[in-house]
Length: 507
Picture 1 (cartoon, helix red, strand yellow):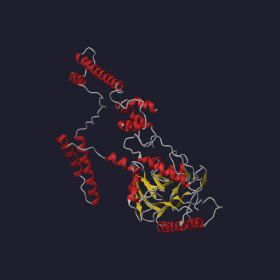
Picture 2 (tube, one colour):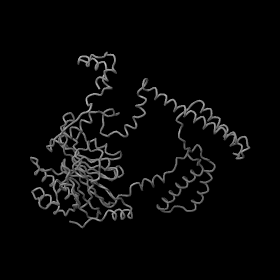
Picture 3 (cartoon, one colour):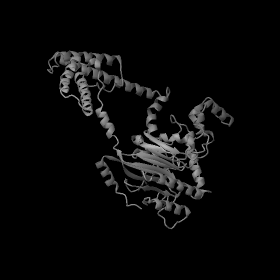
Picture 4 (tube, one colour):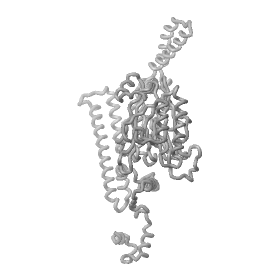
């Protein structure tokens, strides 16, 4: 096993000095990417690459991975990668691997086709080196052919390492489903995996348990980073136990790698600084432009180009001369920065604004005097005060109108109060709520219920489901139908037209 990787602080410091970046890589067995979407968002926010296992998406559903972060790209495989299932006959999801990365490094990332449905590889190109990143999900124990599948997946990793070890730095992250730190438990699967590690001298760390039982007890370390390094610097593996939104029975793990990718944002910022504003040729002072060029052309004519290098230098100087002449002779007027618009606008405000601008123009033509006794100065100040006064008056009237609408909303329009409180409700309500939520369907909540139910059955735990008003809400039911149903049920003490009495009787 190679020497221990350097500490995180030292790795970041040396990367800063060398002008390269530190890639932050996460490996996570998410146990359903849909139901664990909030944890994936949190992990991608402060990291660069996310290695996913068990996303439970079939080939026709892989596009859901685009919802993880606003600026990300991905390469993924479903469990049906080589025998796709029709979208209309999809069973419960299982398996699947993926590699997700931020768009900031998208130009350096290239997906690879190596490996089957349990392995996803991508290549990251740096300055002087290439990095192979592999997301792998090894079969768990208990299946009918789990041992054979496990050995076959190890053989695939063997082929991949053999193919790339001479030209690439290699990082393999994922759920290995074997505890390499537990020497007491030995089996054929674990020995085969250890033989792969010994043959290629792969490094790894045991830093803490990553798998949690259904009773909440941490029991084993199944998630690892295996790496084969020639010149790569890598920080020690870190187990992330503080991801509050994590619903999986695995903890995410993290490592940092220093690779020769130029610092993100450095090149983009320098290019933006070099960009020149567009020249408006219809507003260029042509006489000044011609004078600047004639003056500098005479200087350039004194140094003729005798070689190819001299000609290239001369062309560069000429290009710079034309650019400087255009900038100096064009208008350098700064762009107008518009102020925030008024929330209210009436003919009275419009008239006050027009008068204020008129007084300002007169004051400017008079030389912008500051003497309080000057009439143009007084008119400017008074017109400005009048404009502000009218704006405040109209804003107060608008507030009074809204208050009056709220007071009358009980009998006239219930939507007014709803529209005012709805933004606050959407902000504070539970993110898993689907009923009475715009652009969302209650059917989405069925997926969460189904997953909880299946997990309880798999773990042989008691499952109790309480549904509150799940079928229909009173305010969306046709009341005439409801009253007719109540009448047939025997509620005849009150008139059918008196809905209020019936509501009281029911409650």
